[in-house]
Length: 384
Length: 89
Image (cartoon, rainbow over all chains, first blue to last red; front, side, top):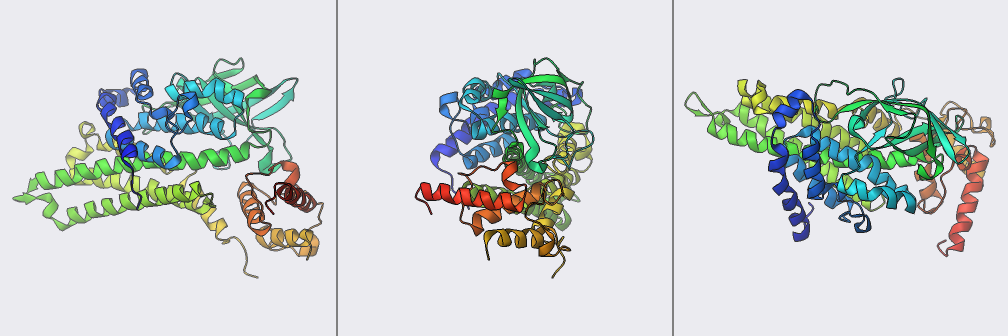
């Protein structure tokens, strides 16, 4: 088990103090599917957006594990699941790849705004015809003079409708397989880039997503993240961070859900006794606790080994599989523990269940994670 | 066994189970032939690091270094020289 220092605990407690204000008006925003710029400004002021980024750019200079530990508190204390999702999307889509692979120019130009939240980030990966098969993308980037010309369209771009900066992955070499993709940092007002209307969705409704269209969009060569052809490695790094950071937020949400269920099971009485005394309810809550702890351990253990430089390809996929399913299962269990109340919008649990379903789809569906694990286990090979 | 043979055997065993080692020419385009996709590339990079004791943070993962068996072989040689130059071998 990890033990957290006093400094790490203070960082986490510091974020907790901001969350009451973030929760104001959550239900109304959720109902209206609205991204709240005022809440976003508060998030920026809390410092959470700059957690893993260098202090020279206005960040807090924390490592992956501390970042996750504080983000877990965001999930625990902030009831706006969409807002929390926008936070991690912003952080991992733009700041993380720029800090890891970007030039000094890109870091100096963009990281300060990313850290304070005045620049909202997004990344454009999926396309209408390439979702799980993301690297089979049709969006192209062709070299022209001092820049690159991007053409194509992307879909399911989280934060897209509110983004100031989009990392677009495009094919720069049709014959180089996974090494023919390049990551570009594109400013929202670049001619040729347009964003469609927000797409209605099941959950995470306060985190808008949309299509992004690229019509002969010229991007300076200096805005390539890493090197041409290196987009796959950028994406691999980003996906690891996205899974660890997004799902540790879910762990925080699961802990809060569990606390609510324990409290409810001890205070709600039926047949003259607290419902927690009924074994079927108690077992359900025990299963929620087990799922939450299992997800937490997978995520922190994988992050610890990633920080050591170990190969975590299988563990990332397993962590994602375990945590996303745990989130769905515990959200459904919470609705069941609360019964009729759980089914109402007022209690907020039905929204958590709708939010949780997104997790078994984004960052690689559960089916794709199983495929990855199976291939890494060599299950696709005949025994010779 | 030289590096070309070691690499060829690995690629065939991992990604071309129905192909004989002699059927994979050292100049065969692994990308165009669909042998190397994203997950395969991750496995190859990890294997190269372990098998040839390369520090993958220090070397260039570029398309032309992974396109053929010959290219991977040259890449390993260059990376090895690079490590010698840094006094790490």
